[in-house]
Image 1 (cartoon, rainbow, N blue to C red):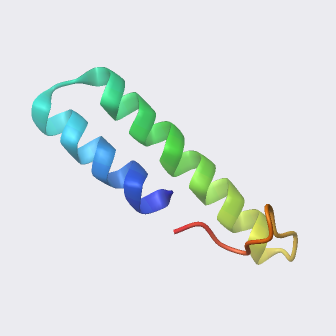
Image 2: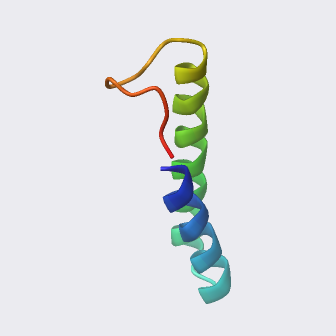
Image 3: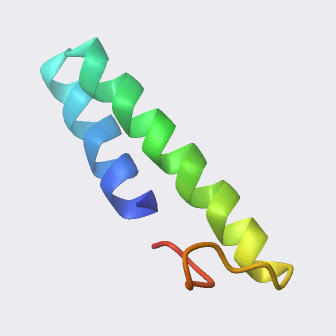
Length: 51
């Protein structure tokens, strides 16, 4: 999720499409939150990390 979010942010900025950039930011933030939850021992959806 984090990698997909970063890719969407880059593509959105290069193509100047704000909705893609916004979706990328949301995916990156959600991925980071899920990774932090996994790091403290609370896996979400059976996974400890979401790359």
